[in-house]
Length: 133
Image 1 (spheres, rainbow, N blue to C red):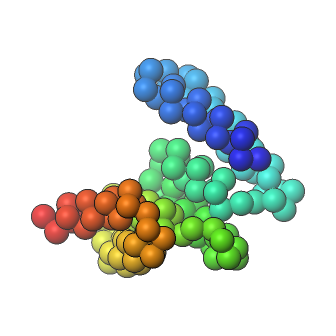
Image 2 (tube, rainbow, N blue to C red):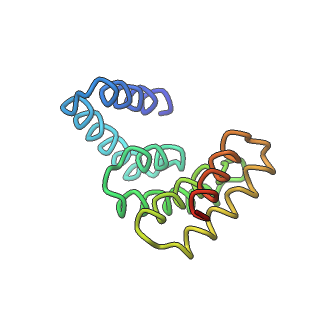
Image 3 (cartoon, rainbow, N blue to C red):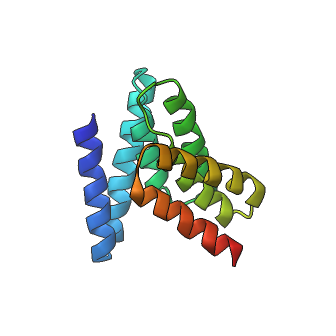
């Protein structure tokens, strides 16, 4: 599962960087179909749902996928949640849902510190700084 959706993600990233919207859109549809298939088979995984949220252009839909990924992650003891919370907060800021965004951002930052994930601590700090300005 991880290899297939990682390859789809790489394809979308490369297509975006090359400005190839046709390949990007096709890859997104493949990821969406794979996510749907895995969900129907009872094999939904928060990492896959988070990847779908990462690549979903519609902000409100992306928020729903991040929320689902968080729900899925809470059912697993070893699945990190800070990446999902911080990314969700960023999308909520885009939607103007600042109170919800602040809660996810602060909780995500706390979790990132606990996990010693310097990149995501920095991302949370960046968002908090931008928000404060």
